[in-house]
Length: 411
Image (spheres, rainbow, N blue to C red):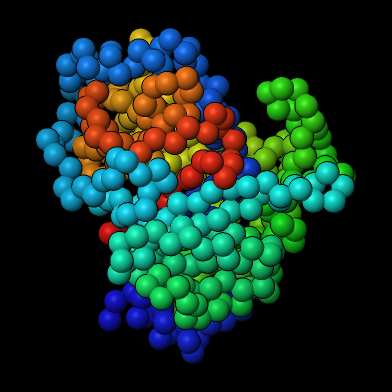
């Protein structure tokens, strides 16, 4: 019996009261702003990227010392590429290696009374039968189970009283999981067998103008509404058995005004721990009962908001930050044991490992904006690049209906 059948059969009888593989919306905003600050391209440099890339040979981007761990990861091709370079956002299935673009979402800001705002997502989910993406406005958050048959979804009105198991083929909910403590976000373990539901007593996607602890200024200097500290805890659900348990976990309020003070929880690389991005922008790890523990040795230097790809499948490399080099786009991969650079390759932001040698990344396509970018495959330690989608140009890095944000899942 596969995991999808287990979910349906066991939760039908055993769903119990509960009482995120991505950061919350505020974390996404922060990551976009960080990428915009660090890119630092001039218009002339962006326009020149294509010409520079054509003129250099593979290996021009430095790959660390001659014995760096990246040398063990070179393979010439990526298996099972499904690309549509003319589509943005994509209409047909995008995949490479071990990864599939399982869904993507756009975000719009909805004004509220008293100058508040709610950042609302619209998801497009991959239908495994048709191989096409279907828009679905019902959900504020979604996590697709590996195998691409089902997704865990949260309704738009937050905090939500339940979480749904969605059949991606029919678009119908097969079971609701009650969440008395108020669901805000969901995230799956890497093998898809465990679910973490982060709970809140206020809408985590609402930005509050009144009664806030501090004023955040954007790049233009104007005052902005901001999230409040509303996380109450989390529930871990074992999907095969249906067993669930909620634990209190208050937000970190040590840095007033930080958008990550009530961050959604997600599983670590092997699914044994939970992680959150702290206000000081490092990861804090918790056992599944909520107790704080030291970072695992290979995840101490990880930052999923800056480099969502994280550890390579074999655990010997880690996706790193933007590494501008001579006017071209570049990103780094790290030795996870030391946090030191192991290689540099093309790309703006590393999103997912297709295999041990290649990553799916955002990368610029030139023009007048660093946000004129598309999904590509990049090769560790090389300037090689293969487009997966067409180009989007949203003018800024802020969430907007013009910008789509990808969600990847293992095949």
